[in-house]
Amino acid sequence: MKMDLEVSEPLDFSSGDHPQLGRKAADNENDQSKAGPAHTHSTSVGSRKIPADPKPKTDEQLDAYMVQISDESSPAESATNVTNQFSDASVRRAFIRKVFLLLTVQLLATGAIMCVFVLWRALKVWILLNPWFTYALLPAFLIIFIVLACCEHIRHQVPTNYILLAIFTVLQGLLLGTLTVFYNANELFWAILSTAVVTFSLTIFALQTKLDFTLLNGVLFVSLIILLLYGIVLIFIRSYWLHALYAALGTILFSLYLVIDMQMMIGGKHHYYSLSPEEYVFAVLSIYLDIINIFIFILQLVGLGR
Image: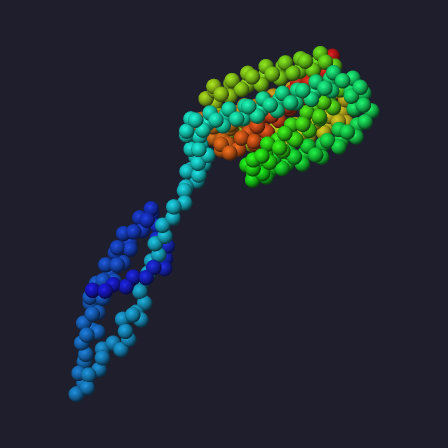
């Protein structure tokens, strides 16, 4: 027996609709078996035979269903795709090793540039007499930062990503160098030492703790906006305690950001957000800026203690 079944409606197997398809097929089969004799027999009127049904069976309207099978992953599965990329311990170790290597090179290069500004007295005098140099560095610094932070395809292109990262490091070192001319060598030494101790302690804490600080990302972003507005207000207010509070809050905020970025780098089951192994440049950029901001705020605290 021939059975016609057309598909026109979506059918979800996961919701239990497949039994309906079986029942509909059985009903069509029963209807065809009952209507079959009407197509094969004829009714006699006198000596003529009149067909019972002049229309062919193919013109009958059939109930139809569409079966759609999709292999799309659920939102929960999509959220764990990045974490699964770190399932191999060797991939995770290689990623962390690359990030720390690039970060070390960045910090050493930044420190070397700062030493030039600290030890070269004639350069310090020239920077104080030519403030346009600092203002000229800011646009170039922001452009490179936006490109590295927002253009994912450029971050993954080798050696373009390394070249941009090197330029960004040099520009950051020059900007810090122009900042150091307002402080003496002793203050810079204590700021650098304090930053190193804070960074090392927070790194060990982020690697060892089971607390997931990545969940605080949204809260810290709002706090960063508030701190930025607070800093704008302090431009017009000369108060020692308000500036000291601003520097202390900035140090705490970027210390938390450092813990979050470290946990995003190492990934793992205890961290809701994590970076993919291809995002080593973004990881280096984030951790580097956290350390630089911690240094700047600690330097302000040291300078206020004069």
